Every structure is written in C-alpha cells, then in structure tokens.
Image 1 (tube, one colour):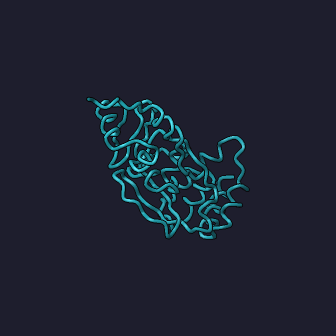
Image 2 (image 1 turned 90 degrees about the vertical axis):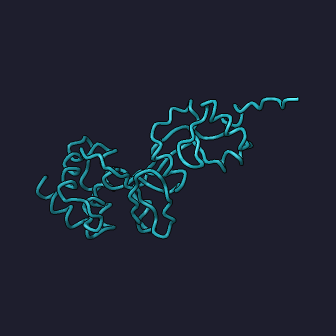
Image 3 (image 1 turned 135 degrees about the vertical axis):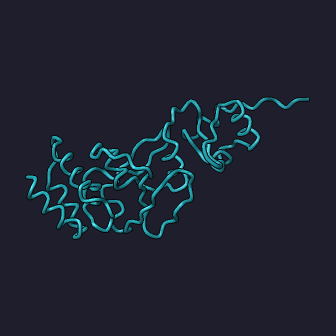
Length: 200
C-alpha cells in the first residue's frame, strides 16, 4: 500500500524564501521530501545543501548563499557603493565584510572577503531584504564612502572621489555625517577632509 502523499505547504510556509538542508530538517521536512519537491520544481537547489522556494521570487542567489553560510557577512566597499548608486563599476566579485576572527565561509559565489575590526563592525551597518524572512548586512552610503577613503582598504582614490561627489549631490547629504564616522579611522579622515575642502 502506497504511503499517503505529504503536504509540504505547511513546512514551506514556515521557512524563509531560501534555506539550508539542516533548516529544512529542523522544520520537519525529510530528505525524501526535499528530493521530491526539487524534482517537481517547487524547490530550486541553487547551491550545495541550499534550497529556494520557487514561488519566493528570490533573485540574488549569490548573496543568499553568502548569507546562509555566513549570517553576519555584510556587503561593503565597491559592492556597497554600487548598491547605493555611487559608482558605475559593477565589481566582478562581491565585497563582503566579516568581523575579524569570524569564519570565512567557502561558497561557490565569486566573493572577496574583508576582515573588519569587531569594535567598528556595526558602524553604519544596515540590512537589505533578500526575500521572505531573509535579510543581509549592507554598509550605508556614508560608512562605505569613509571605507573607500581608507588607504588600507585598497580602493582607488578616483573611485572614492567619484562616490563622494555622487553622494554630495544628493539632497540632505551632510559632510558632517561623514566626518563623524571618519573619526574612527584617522587614515581615512585625513584624505576625506582634503577632498571635501576642494569639492565644497
């Protein structure tokens, strides 16, 4: 006698738009059910041990994989500047910050990991929505500009100036906001101040 068909909807409804195999098992799904849902194209296995609900509209699988493997990972530097429409460059790799001492996850997405100091890791850290129940860290525009002016980060000076110019053109942008953040990074503050004096 055939076993009754398990209704997966209650399980999927309790999970975020994308999840790991372990999260699925913890929610009550079995490996057998995961395989069936994948065959039926209700789930998309987009990375090893990771699934997305096909109805979720999830678009950025690279960021989703990075978030699921490293939940505190935060979009930073050129990738953050691009997300804020402050530079034209679309980086080939995703710049992601982790707190110094955190594990660097191995992921299939093209990622450049950057280690940030734990004491300043949260400064300017916001979140972006990836899908239902999923959000990822993103440094806001002012923090990203200050980071770009920090010579230790390796961002070309021309790109930092381009981002600063674009930000200053926006309504409500206050140089004092940048300087308040830059006080935590003297190396960035000196370069930022000299460019502000020319542009303002």
